[in-house]
Every structure is written in structure tokens, then in C-alpha cells.
Length: 216
Image (cartoon, rainbow, N blue to C red; front, top):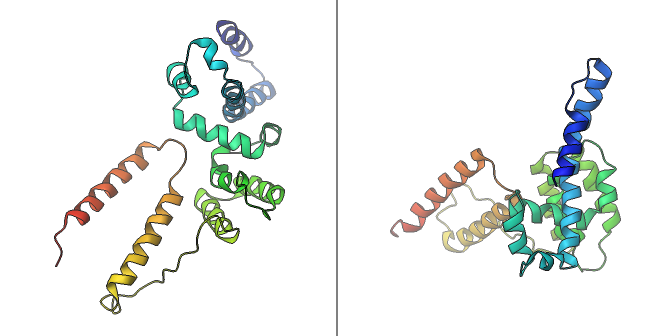
């Protein structure tokens, strides 16, 4: 590992003086961060699949990751699943691609269900990762899961305030189930940002207060 780091430092230790060299290196380093996660996932996948972690004295891949890797375990597993669903060569050949956006498509591409045009879906999500938001990608993934029978379609219907009292028990349960399902689908597979963690904590407090509220 020291040699790898030394080679990396030797390559980028000196700052060029000319614009073209500075630009090329800056762009390359910007892309390197994303590519590094794919390359990392490929190597970790081989360690896992061949059980090479045993050579290091670890009883499981999870134990190896927690002891050796400087990256959060959930992030590692997320990138490994994306790698398995899309393929290393496909990911590395796409420049300026935010790989974590592809996570919602993983359950579709790894499903054993028949009749799913996986090659077409794979290309579509690669293209959407360049132009669409995470919310838009997650929404399309939910729609495809329903279309191919991977999840059940929601029977919930929107209610207005005037009709809230009528059929509140049955309809309320349906609305709540749909809301919980949508919330679970919207959760990112990777680690949360500080802002996301804070918003989630506030939501948990609100939900806890609602659960503890006495019935009327």
C-alpha cells in the first residue's frame, strides 16, 4: 500500500505551470473519485467471492471490511451491488457519472423474475443518471418494480380534509401503508449527509410523538 501511495504522490506532487496540464489533471482527479469507488468495489467483490479474507485471519467478509476498510460498510455494499448490476466496464466507460444514482435500479437488474428487459433498463438508467435527479430516478424505479411485479401497486387514493372523517379507519391505514412504502423507497442506499441525518432525526421525533399520542 505504501508503494501505491508513493506512486500516486510522485505523479501529482508537482503542480504544472501551463493551463492545459493543470486542466487535464484537475479533470482527471475529479473523475478519479468516482472511478475509485468502482475499482474498489471490484477488488472487494473478488475478495468476498473467493473468500480471500480468510488469508487475513477474518472469519467473514463483514469482519474484514469493518477491520480493514476506511470506508463505511453501507457505502461499500452499495457500490458492490451497483457494480454487480451494471458491470465494471460499463461504469468505467461512462464519464461524469454519479454512480450512487444507479442504486434504485439494482433490485430490478438483479431480480430473478422473467420478462424484464434488463439490458434496456440498464442503458436507460445509465443515461438518466447523467440528466435526472435522484428523486426522478427513484420514482421511475418504483414504477418499473410495480410494472414487473416486484412490488404491489398501491391502492391508496388521496383524501381531502372534508372526507377525512368518512372511512378514516380503512382509508387511513391504506394511506399510511403507501406513505411508509414510499418513504422506504426514497431512503438512499449509501450513507446519509449531515442535513439528511438531522431531517431524519426530526421526523423520527414527530413519528414517535404521534405513536405515543392517546387515542380520542
